[in-house]
Amino acid sequence: MARIKVKKEKLVDFSFMPSLKCTLACAHCMYEAAPENKIVLDIEKTKKFITTIDFSKINAMGFYGGEISTDYKRYQSFIDLIPKNVIKFTITNGAWSTNKKKIKEFITFVRKNKLQVFISKTKFHKPFQNSAVLRELAKKYNFTLKDEDQIIPMGRARKKKWTCSKKCLTYAGPTRLTLNPRGEIMFCNCDGVYPIIGTANENFSMVVERGLNIKNFCEKLR
Image 1 (cartoon, rainbow, N blue to C red):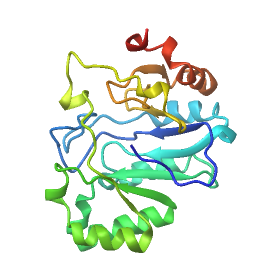
Image 2 (cartoon, helix red, strand yellow; image 1 turned 60 degrees about the vertical axis):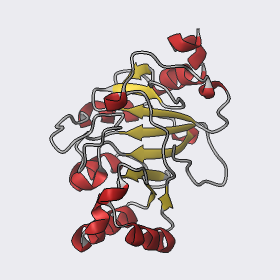
Image 3 (cartoon, rainbow, N blue to C red; image 1 turned 90 degrees about the vertical axis):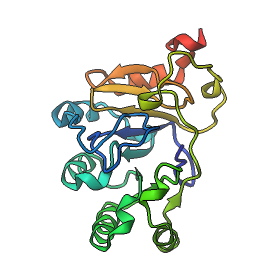
């Protein structure tokens, strides 16, 4: 889980998944992202939802999927909807690190948008990365190299039966919510299958209230 670097944390980390297209098709992918995945987030519905956001409650806004480097133009259209003073971040598989042109494109894009960058370093991603380059870039641009992630039992790693740790009830950081390409809002302070607690057709404050009271909305906590 990415922990956003801020001086004082606010109530909510909210993320958008503009696309599920990815340069890889990892066996553990919780969103089943892949090069051939064409599912995208409706930008017009997203615009309407954003008008309901109280940005004074936002800790940071995320943009990932999918892999941001597959479609900078699409991701840019969503980033442009957010006030410039709001902290923004992305999570990437780092596969662009093996190609000089792609490295330059990635660095140019994230610096232009002042994105905090989290680079996944799972065993699934490492074979497609240039680790030396990523270490150098992390040092130069203050990128975060993530540790090995716990495999979440959803997406390609889905399980019919999984044990709820109730981690969400003791998590001390911001409530993490994500609008996926299907228009669903997921509660992500979880190490199981992310519960759906709203849609892009609803009001931000309503969805946040559900996230803050997740024990009333998640069947695993009842």
